[in-house]
Amino acid sequence: MLRQLRLGVGQDTEGDVQALIDWLGRQLGAEIALVDRAGEVEVSTARLAPDLVAGLRPVLRQVSSGQLAAAATLVGVFHVRCEALGRRIPRPVLVVGSPLPLTREALALASHVGAMVEVLRRARQADDLALRYQDAAARLRLAVFMALMTGELTLARRMTAGAAPPLLDAERLRIHLLRCPPSHRGRLIDAYQDARGYHGRGLMVRCPVYDDHLICLLPMEEDSDSADGGLAAPLRALVRDNPHYALGISAPVPLAATAQAYDQARHALAVACHTPERVADYHDQAPLARLLPGQQALAWARAFLEPIRALPRLTLDIISLSLHFPRSGVARLLDVSRNTVTAHLGRVQDALGIDLQDPRSRAELALALAITGLPLPDGNAVDKPLPMPSVDSLLSTEAAITWARAFLQPLRLGTDRTVYRTLRAWIEAGTDAQRTARNLGISRTTVRAHLRTAEQLLKRSLLTPGPGTHELVHAFRIADRAP
Image 1 (cartoon, rainbow, N blue to C red):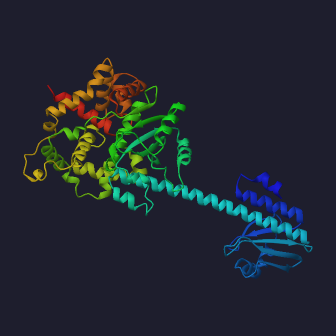
Image 2: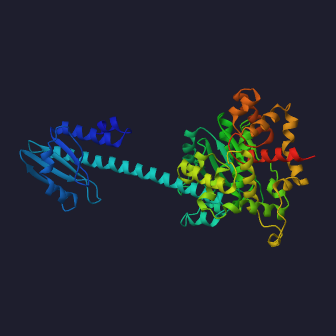
Image 3: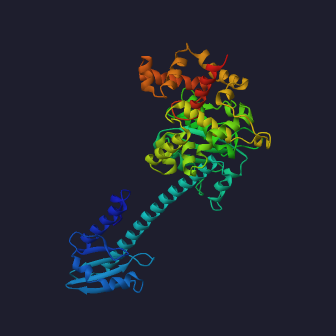
């Protein structure tokens, strides 16, 4: 029996059970059936007569319900023995039917096989439970990450129902964004996962948008800029030892600024992919929204966003996410269809009178949302009536011009301006590489090569939708108007 079990084990449990039942039937010269908790035949020998089990219904109910542990009876010419398996009621029942009375040795062998069948069933149930647990833990980690992305620290703690990850007790964190083959993500998560479903003091999350991204949130040590949680060094070692890996690391930020850290890690990853070490830290540069005159910028942003203020919360969430991810990614993040995402974006376009396919419109909308997300300037000063500024007047300030020049400087120094011209044409073509190539008379491959070079020089992600493209649009707009 054990040899037969060894031949089939490790493939699939149902096949193992069927093999054991067939083997037992051959050994005893009997017909065997395994009746499940619902009273249906789960597996049986090939020649089992349906009438055999049908004539056992009263006995099967008694055995399955726990009234009897085993029972012997006659059904036609068959000597039948029914034996309950396991402890949980209703119990499955092993049925053995033979034209001749079963010997004591045959009954013992049938009991041994029944016990082994129950062990296999429990193993399958344990595997199923483990898989469901892993899936639930992964969903919870993603939910915590998404709550942190919206700055909802209290919500992130409450959704863990008293089992909050240690990460939520940290003051600051860094995000390590690892690019690796999609099939490696599960293996890495399992390797560092603890019994609670977390990763020590850190948190590892499969990116729901990009299949080759693994998001690692690591708390910061007190009075230090180094990441704690036992994952920072192993992640660097993984990149060192695997040529297909790359790692982008954000600056230290408060937990409420997780979304900012994620954007920084994306920019750093774009740079890391083009460096020999394949590891890059984010080099901080003040965002444009913080450099604009606070009161005037907030007045413009509020007026710009006023037409969509009354739209449903889902619409506002979709428009915010769509500025950072492709539409298919937004649909996966919110578990809605791509058509639903398109419909909500259509509402926003109609309300604002803009074209969200145009990178300049997207950049302007992203700037307005970034400004309204900043702390209110000068207390209640924003309540005073102010003349309505235009976005061009805001982008003509000395601080904005200085920011744009610093942003574009690496392009002017690092190339012969071919990359600079390609980027301008790319923006004019709506960030469509094929149209850009056609307008410039070069190949699409060349356009993408120039974009990769620009990512390395600007230390920004451009090949995927996000803040890098928005900043490039603003820098060109400011540079065109500056003296």
